[in-house]
Length: 284
Image 1 (cartoon, one colour):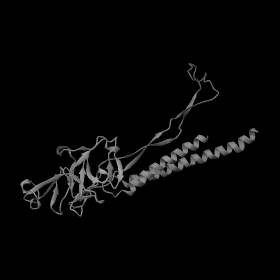
Image 2 (tube, rainbow, N blue to C red):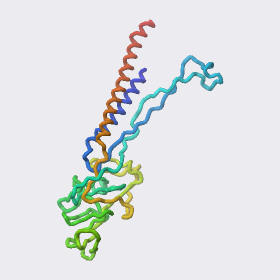
Image 3 (tube, rainbow, N blue to C red):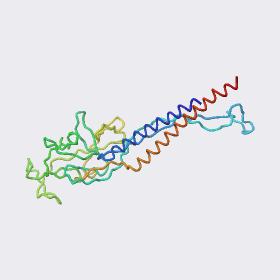
Image 4 (spheres, rainbow, N blue to C red):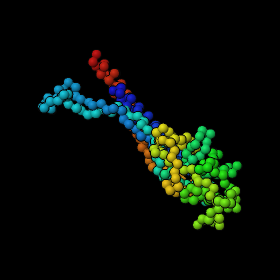
């Protein structure tokens, strides 16, 4: 009977983990590039219950190694197995800002931080004081040649992630290239965004500020060549892949499941009190 306390308590603890994930998803519903978290659980080993003081001869005439009739299985609780990130594509939001970039497909932007390279899907960038393309926290966005340095209204990013600048701002006029469907007569290839992918990107670890870092399970970052990259869209950002309605429904489910486990503990406590106060008194 006391086991029922621990079973109910493990269920309440599991729902707390689930509630934390749902609350975090709702808090970041407007965060660009945010990927929602989901809690996965696993059950403790179940116990097989058999009827005591019964050899089962009449129910199982052919006999067995353990002839006592089986009543059923008894669950012994649940625990958190994994809190993983769902990396589904978010919707595209138009911003009309040249500094905002979105990835349509699998891949990650690379940014430089004091702790090393980190990865993000949040393409809401800005122009830093020194002319570098940066995240909102001031971390430089990396290209193949290092941090990307641009000026306002003088660069374009194509669907492959190549950064082109107006020829009149180019330091090396010898790199001028005429491109179709661009607003300038002549452009210069400045750099290409450093886009990467992972063998098991679902195991990337969140670092806060929309940044992720690689882990032993995710594997190292793999540089993406031009012909294998996701489509880069300038003037757009990727919205969070959170559906507020779904998250609110899950929050209601969590509250009801938490209350159900709470009632299990209360009922177990009541039965134990009856056993001690009444049954034990009668047996005396």
